[in-house]
Image 1 (tube, rainbow, N blue to C red):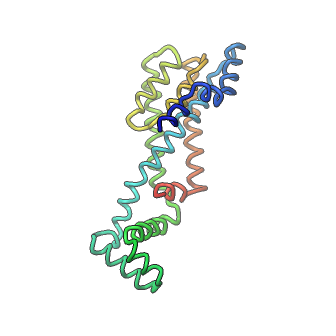
Image 2: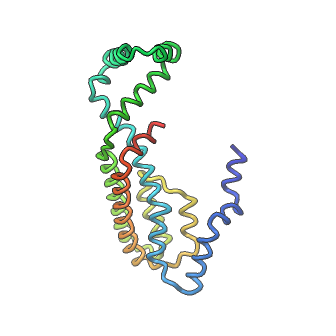
Image 3: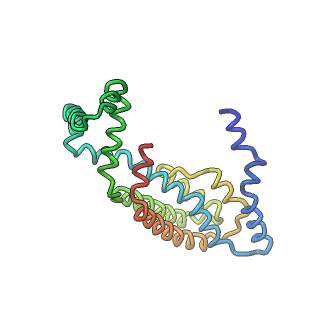
Length: 222
């Protein structure tokens, strides 16, 4: 664990991982190129989007549990045990009997997982959409609040946005640190483009949920 920590925080490795981005940023600064749109897209893709996806995934567990408990099979402990045994008898499979007797806990876990996947096989995106919209609203509110602070520079503006979101989203400090380097974007223009990039991000994530509706449900329980 100690060696892994040293590896992931090695300055040389971190520099090599981001050297192409650092070079592009240096060229923009050297040529006095406006970085507003580019930096807004970068902050959205590298910092906000992964945090939003992580929040949606983490929030699915309680939602799915609540939904499954509305089923008669999971309403009480007795109903649950009855449903497991009835299903086992109906299959009349020796290997299933053996698994039930020798590894009851593992058998039940697999049974529950199969029921969850069966319940959400059509890939309802209701829960994902609710949490996604909640994140987008929080981000937009954080941007508007940061604009009123008159930070004066993008670094302070982004720090204000992240501080406002810290109770909800876990933003990678490595990605944030890399974003901050050689950033000469204008704050007002950056805020404008960030709002536009957040709209695009929301649309992209919604389309992803429609195209791969069951992906998040499956990953939540693996």
